[in-house]
Length: 309
Image (cartoon, rainbow, N blue to C red; front, side, top):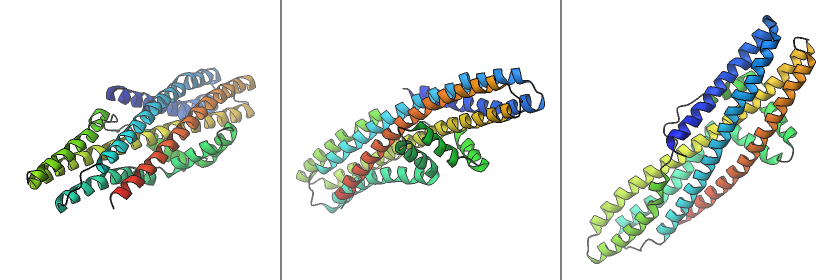
């Protein structure tokens, strides 16, 4: 998927969620409770379910699949980078040793920084992912956990604020450039060996330092952007589930207070249940992929830490 395509997916998700919010939290209440335009409210609710929330969910699922794929590819590249660094020629020159160590540490820091930055901001996301894994075979229990986590208006407002953000700068990580890094390290190793023979160590150190700075920049951007979009997409999916749950409860309230015919409310809630079930299923699949990525990330962090000693 191209960067432009990913940005388009993001805009579709956010725009549909904003439209859904207006219908769900403003229009429907006015139509049902104030103006008593129940027929119009039912039509608007159908549009909300069949169009806005369904499209947002579909795009969020598509984006999540692509980001998971890119994250796994990125971790494979990091594994190859560490392999090449472990093959790096031994040198008695302290400057070369220092730059080599800095390169290994930069790989480690890029991975750790991405985790720390996002963990601080998205602790609740981590909790929901854990719940999705725990209740994989019981969607009802999982949905109850989501309802509990976002039952008060403050937590829902925070969720809406994060979900409405569109300022993901670039999204698309240049994996082709990253794929070239292991080969560049291999070439640098050859140059270090050659320079040592020709007594041109200073030249090798300068070259190694320039490459190190560039690699650090690539890795920091790659990890940060992929984790950012992964967490943001998770928030969008949670927001969709919370909206569906709220609409379900509004329908119960309106049929109970005879604002809405019981049959219409029941039909709408059956539609909500079907969409909710599908989104929850996709969320479970994402939770599994997320855990695989985190496990691989920790494994690579351990390798980088041992190599940097």
